[in-house]
Length: 403
Image (cartoon, rainbow, N blue to C red; front, side, top):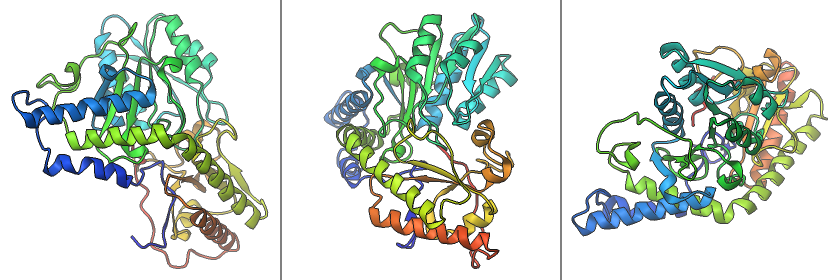
């Protein structure tokens, strides 16, 4: 990838921190034991590394180490939380609740349970900023509800949900509460003593760890969470996720969690400053004409900026900003044509939603990159509004905004 392309898609994935790479490399070549091999030093060493990583991840979110179940990422963690809870409650409850702005990794398992296993599903609407209110969740819960799932922070517009209040509500109603915190963990404080979630999903590659490793928090203290495993095998991870543990990736997740705990607060301050600098630059260069910010101004992820540009075509805009890597406000996949379900749920019109870009800053984003990106984006919008084309740029592929 040419050096001149500015990466502002840190919601989709982040660059692995070199310190994380350094921590994981020895477990590929020197310390390559199987963590389940309890009869020799190679296995003991790997097992100790896994235990240490479990402590690091637990420390980041205020959990106990035994409450951390390693998975391949947040998509698997979400599926285990949702399907595992539903199947554990089969015959005891027949109702699920989620929000309209969840990631597909939550919405699709919920819909499958409704479609194929007879569960009823209530989808809670959001307000125009993409926020889910506790009152709306309370209205959706019935005496048959087995699980409520509401994301901690939205992956498109960055809105932070009141999950502490929603968790308290679910606890009062005796309902299991799951939150997909894959965009929140590592960027804002997530303390399970305050949140009160029974189940929480996270993934390393959203906070400068590698792809392919994540975790599901499963509360043990005063727990209501009961899960049925989706994978049968050797009984790894408290019997909830069988399979040989990927020790290098687990070590990397632990180190990324440790760095997030140490540097997250300062990272957040810096990213919020750069995010606001980027927005101010774009608005000033375009004389604040035809620009709409999506999501809340205050209760928003510090690295998130979602802007809609009036008077341009969405695909042309994507083609025109070839010097900036960003995500569109369009559908996650070809199976869902049109604007994203998040922007639709927020009441954003189809044309503006199609001309929306999501910018995600990260630990390695620089002030110079932000300033250059602001100029490139404003120039592209100005040229398109004047009737100019994207200067021969080849069309981009709109892909799934994965966890």
